Length: 128
Image (cartoon, rainbow, N blue to C red; front, side):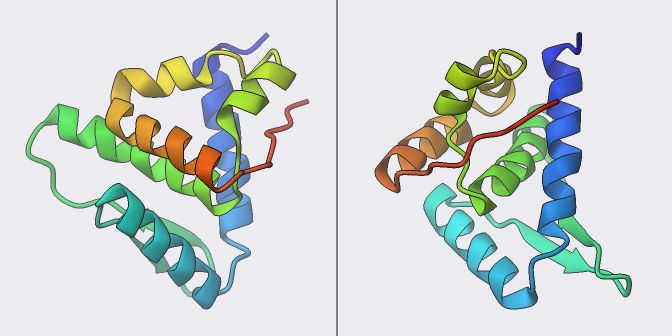
């Protein structure tokens, strides 16, 4: 059985693969919308192989790094309209994800949960 940290890494990798398949307009829309809602400045870079990197900036301290690292994870969930609470309810291996995220990026998580509720996100994370 995977720990929540192991599940987090698996989810992050899976959604990274999906993110790599979006075209530039779709990526611009996701990042512009996310940055507007979260009052953030995340950017992406697409390399010559079409792989996406979420560009993290210089950080003032380790707390700022953790917040932005987990914020970058939320961008991936945001891109695919994932309902974190519904996912936790339907998938035992995901239960605890919101608590895990709240330890590192509580302000972003609160905004995410409110946004996903208002926009009626329906996506569910499936693990095997």
